[in-house]
Image (cartoon, rainbow, N blue to C red):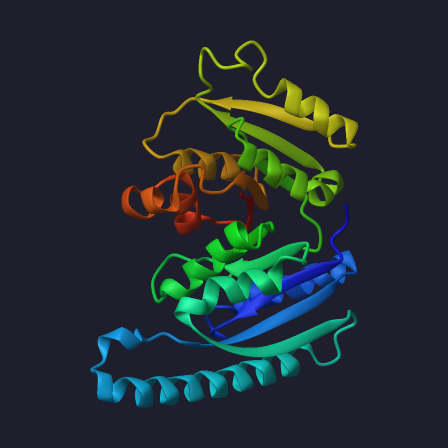
Length: 279
């Protein structure tokens, strides 16, 4: 499989700076078409207003959202002017309640969605909603790009977070074009279960599958020496000098991850390199 359509979403030129640049770099490297969705959002909750003011406020907020979409579309066109790959920028406006359906409809036919970190300082619920909509409703792989990280022309060293889950396997299949081009692929298995199906050969079946796709991978079995899986994974990324992580997303319910935390949420909060995920 090759990436032929790559999509990124713009809601704020500053917050989306790294992901927007990464999407363009990937489109150029993969010879893919880049779709830029420029979202003007009405972030208010209409139900909070008294009845007489609600209609007027909603109308004003949607008008502002449309203006924001036009500005974002113009910004994208200025940034992509002269690009040597095909691209399209589309301005869209929506209320937050309609955001998941809109994102799903616009991303479900793409091969890869490139987005900024959904968690962190200065980030609202919209970035989290966009990420989850692409993963769950659009059923498309998503690459999360940390702030101030420049995506290389080629990912040389990739770490796979393998926990035998269906989500992780979907992410690996989605990442095959990157894995096949990489110089080093490390399958990281953290504290594998003693009575699991792969107890005698952790990562062996996955290594065999990847080898048949032309990917030479090494297996690293890591002890859980830190409370959070994401911290152990990040340390392994630094040890391997990796430039991308491939992992499954939201093995637990989104509600549980949002309230109690989880490997996906923690990883997206502290990620130091791009993370390719699938659910």
